[in-house]
Image (cartoon, rainbow, N blue to C red; front, side, top):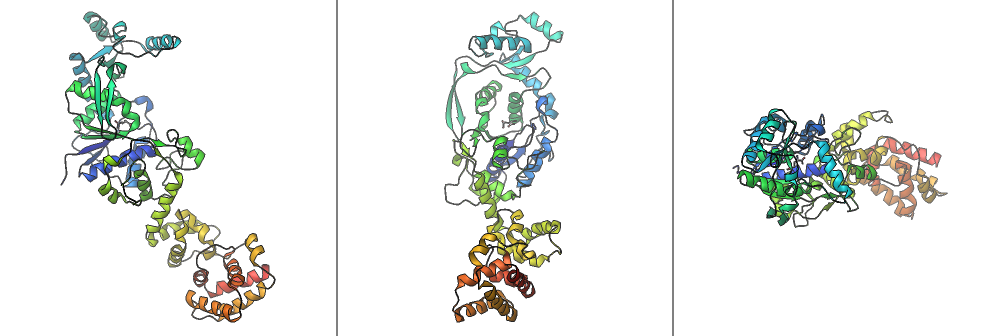
Length: 501
Ligand code: GLU
């Protein structure tokens, strides 16, 4: 049964979605789904100067990739559309005018040059220029000018903006679900522009009007919007509208824990900060992360279930998520942990799925003279996946399953290839040759029997045998490898090692 809970993710299409933005989307989604509510995508594109071509599409694809299906939005439709603010242009002006009529907002005619001048004057005196109660009567606006002057300016087309008249000396008590009560003195607020000269609303007006018209019940957004909360609170009161509940999510911090995570941190630390690639920045998807891992690590940036459980699917998160378990303090981003999640998710993936991804890489691999069968590849994947973080690690972990080593580890050779090793390997070769059936178990039995019978040590036989077959001392159970590559190939590799080493 659906509930009346409605949340929105309201990005501005000013560039690619940062993982912080994606986390905001995720928390909104989880909250909505937990309460059988609706998850809405609204594109806040009223700032034409910052509009970036392709960004909206990028946002939609990123949400789709990690599985956050929207209930309403620009590409989906819904009863509260349109969901792009640029297509709602005509809605906002009347709300700004309503506030003017009620004396809660005013026209301001100050030119950008005049405002710059005021700012400079203040700076020179070591002060900051704030357009509000203490100076608005000295500036050029419908409060300081006479009615005739204002009408005259409006009819002659003098450029103007509409500013909100922030009250003087009121103590506001703001509510935030995560932070609790926040007290603020309205005297510190400036008279924010609600409506711009280009005929479009600013973020503040459009955001409040749309949240109201779209019947948003819970606003869940990043901490960077906390300073706007007082104004939003005042705007709701000015319109006489019921406020939604507000939650401001903690910042995502640099791996050092100091300061906000930025694109530069990703470049420096060699990790993605965007879900999908954007221009020359590689995304999580293209770096080989599974959407499940991204969802899982994002959830833990600022939230925890209060138990030891770390692995959560989107479905499980939907059950477990609670806003009151979101932290106030910043969440340190740990690139190693994101890899850990990917490794964990990789182990949970069906072998068939991993195999088909790996198979695509094998088909492109120029060093292979023949493409292995899918079944063989799957058996290899099963043996090596434990150590892999990404599917792209598979080749390095398994190349010797597909071709004979081209070189032998010098370090291993020095340590394990002794004077009598070649003759021991000759004997091992004979044993392998006569082993039937050529299965890991039988090969192991035969080799071990021989070692015991001849009173040899395992240390003298096993490392060089591995070196001959694999080229190094790495890899899973050696007898599994030998079975997999088969008798003929094993004998060939041993023979080459005896000759070369
Ligand atoms: N358009 C704002 C953004 O880009 C939305 C902030 C909010 O959710 O109120 O994040």
